[in-house]
Every structure is written in C-alpha cells, then in structure tokens.
Length: 77
Image (tube, rainbow, N blue to C red):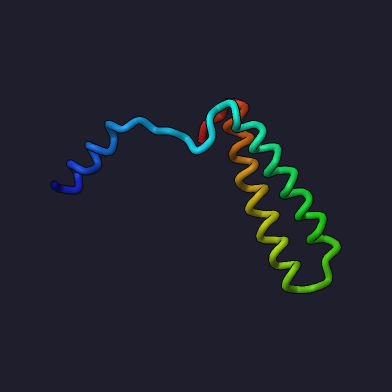
C-alpha cells in the first residue's frame, strides 16, 4: 500500500474527539481553574525547581483550557 492509499483510507474514518461536545466546557473550566491556581503557586514559590514545575503546569493547563474553551463556545480550531 502506498502512502497516498494509506492517507485516503484514513480519511474515510470519522473523527471522534477525546471529549464530547457536552464535556468540553467543564473540561475547559477545570483546566483554566487549575492553570490559575498553578499560576498563583508560581507567584509565591521561592524554590527554583517548584517554580519551574508550576510554570510548566500552569502554561500547559491554561493553553489546553483556552483551546477547549474556544471549542466549547463554537469556534473550531
């Protein structure tokens, strides 16, 4: 099977999102909330290692939370 045949065969399968449309807003709210909490922990942390860990957690949660929030309100990316 050539690569184009594999791409064509894969395009026939329907896309199933990880979270259904009804769960996108609660997931977005949870991710944004946890991102804001991690941002607060980042701002008061003194240890460089915990600062780095909370910065990574906060940016990841806020990034995915923003995308899920955009999808939940109807703007598809």
